[in-house]
Image 1 (cartoon, one colour):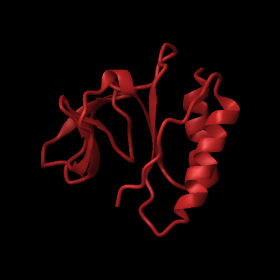
Image 2: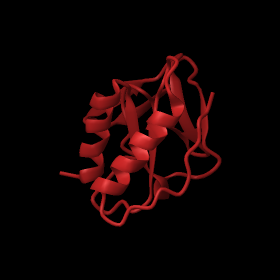
Image 3: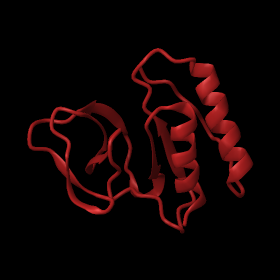
Image 4: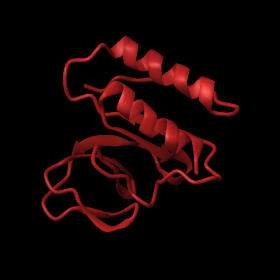
Length: 123
C-alpha cells in the first residue's frame, strides 16, 4: 500500500473528479497537457496498453505519462517516490480555490514530511 495512492483515491471520491499522481523524478521538463494523436498508447498500471487516442494526456520530453482515465507505469507512484505531481482533472466549472485548499491540506495532513511546493490551474 502507498499513502499517496490511497490519498489520491480518497480525494477523487471526495471531489467527484479524476486525479492522477506521478513520480516527478521519472519525468523530464517541460510537462505539457495536450490531446493524444490517433494510435497513441502507453503501458498502464495493471494493463499492457492504454489507448490514448484523441484523449487529454500529460506528456514530458519522453512521451505521454498520464491521463484522466489511467496512469502509466513509467511515472507511477512507488514506495521510494519522494517528489510527486498530483493532478486534478476538473473538466467542469469548479471552485478552484476550494480544490487547491482541499488537495494541499489533505497532502499536508496525511503524508509524512510533505511540502506543497506549488499549485497551478491550467485552463
